Image (cartoon, rainbow, N blue to C red; front, top):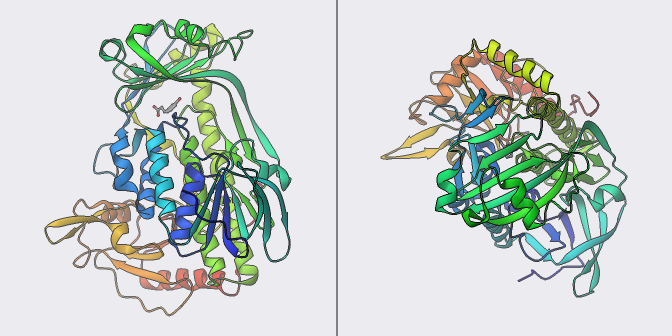
Length: 527
Ligand SMILES: O=C(O)CCc1cccc(O)c1
């Protein structure tokens, strides 16, 4: 059931698009007590899987939302991925990092999108401060000094307007909102036609299929097979010049392309979609009161399964900044600066990760046989002829620029770990104890520190007697980074670190200055 549309209310935030990024944005914002209006053109969750991969960082965001228990039944650890070269030889192997896991979840996972999306939507619909408008399409947008006005049309032809202080556009790759505010996409130079096929394999099919995910780095037709949850298998198959993207999604044609692995009596086609795999990023991520996020802000080839993850990273980055501004915790130029840091951080991260994804794509997609053989020889030479396991998550970059300490340190912009903490006979994840705001995490035995700034409000978490870790993850993080204290942002990225009390006091003073009298945060999105 839709929530009633409140026409006379100015909402804090309107979220356009109720896919995963929009639902997470709406859930985080409404969960913080902001009045949120979220709309989507369709009434139903799309019943087929577009995304298949989900990282631990995203599960941690789901934990913050309060939906992680509802989604875990639809999540499974990623299998290893094997890359095979021109002659079918193993040239690379991606695996899971060994436990203990740094963020409290298996780092790389596959999931079933429709029920996860349904859980996200149901959660938002349960929130007191969220107004959900389904079957509702935004048709026009204008902004003034106070707010944004969205005009919309319902699927029953009802029309109306909604005003909100800010808008987050999560309306997908062909975003109407992005176009309305004149944000262009920069081309990061990848554009290829591929077929994506999801199959539910039966027992005979499963018995025949590879037991790891596979990248077939074959010049004739590069392709991928991903092991999804249960009996879900996904193929991504590059199309050759002259192949018709519309024809290959016809079941008989799709089965021809799958014939190397399966025949029609060994599985059921769940979804066939022809895509152009692109690498695109919004040139700016904010126009006035309007922000772009998710596929509206970037698209990347799928070779590392980062499409949905990147969208959730966007809105997790933006939500706490919008909340700080809307609650008046930061005002004036400092507020503008904080909001500007969203685009700086996310655009650079998307550019860096997309570059890495394209690098992986270049390995997989080499069409020249001689060059592909050279690639295979080089990769085998690099590992001394023995392909070593490489953890998948090592390729996800941290944040740079934006709201990070000006005192450079390799820990800045990385995700602070989420250790398990002993609580009586139970163990609890740190985020559940620390709450959703800023943290000051002190390593066991760190000297007391006196500080008095009210902005931002920071919760002090002392590891040790009051917060005993069960696996030593945070202690190991401090050792690895050569520091004793970490200032951690509400999105759990490390703002800055310190080794002693005077260093920490200076860091906290500088942070407070950025929230009060506006020591500048870098807000130029160009790199
Ligand atoms: O990390 C891997 O091994 C593969 C990740 C992946 C996920 C989804 C599609 C795809 O092409 C690759």
